[in-house]
Image (cartoon, rainbow over all chains, first blue to last red):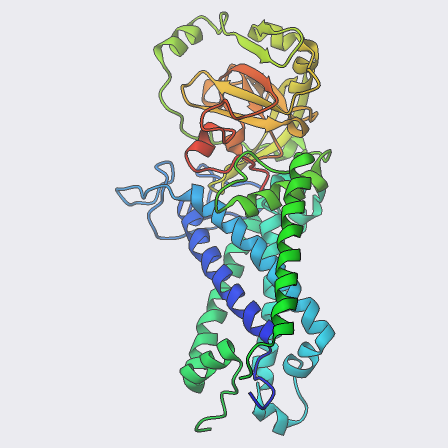
Length: 216
Length: 252
């Protein structure tokens, strides 16, 4: 490998660990939501109180009025275990990525919007850079915060985690909306990779090879 | 792509060995300080152990949020429970006069308490939120005897590590570590929102553990066992719900 890799080994490893954890969090999160597909605003909310909105899906609990004549199987046991295991791995992976990127200059070099349009064309454009920064420094921290705001033990040590979010149920609703916006990012991200040349760019993220070596 | 040199191999091998022995040492230290939950084995063990250990380091003495009277939910949701047994119905018909809560295990003076015996202890009133693992929640005022007072009256032996609590309903039991058992907000609740604790909400006696999710607040408790090990209880995972796939520690 003669030239500098397109992505360094640390970026490649943390990228795929993040992808794996995100997939696990998404599947387990959806399973957990299915047990109560109603959302509220404020501190409390249950089937006896009006919902802010509900998802038009069947539930895995008979106590939730969904309009469907059947109840899905309860998958919350393993889903909750997997959700927290994946959350820990993602937080540790993210911490490693952010610490390394700050020290190595990855943020400054590759993610802060570039003034020089020529260099811009060689990697990401300003909109892409901004999107990555928002995902890393806004969406992920907010989704972690709103997750912690639902923990009765964590909130006992740091009550403002829940009160600043507007209450426990607000935190749960925000957690869901933030997860949806991360899914929206994922869809756009994969679509852009597809348009730019799926095989070459995925290869680059696996081996580090420059996607512009062939054909570009 | 150049072959990996012998030096690189050696360095990587040493780093891996150091990493593994570091993890093993961390696991031993965590176990010695009681930071490994009873369901800390298996594929989800690492995540559970990290959560439990982190919470025990940060929240050992912290108090669950208490709310204003104005925040009490006008419509608390009782959730469904299996239909009561005939035995329970007879006890209920009698106003729970013959209900007994036994205190057993690693205590100097085992006891068998009636509901009135429990009510004779100084009551603690607290307005806290109960949150179900499904996502819903409500706020209520809970009135009860702190578990720590009942345990102290029975005389906890120094080896105690967990308190196991059983519902009168078969197969419904759970346990907490001593941090939660001795916590001032962990109540043997006998009243709620100004009246006796309704049966739907766990009456006559329910253990309220406000720093954990609702499923740790087992309804209809009739037996407390202080123990140094959870191995002899069910599958050894610390609760009936852990046996069914739910995490033992639910402070999340």
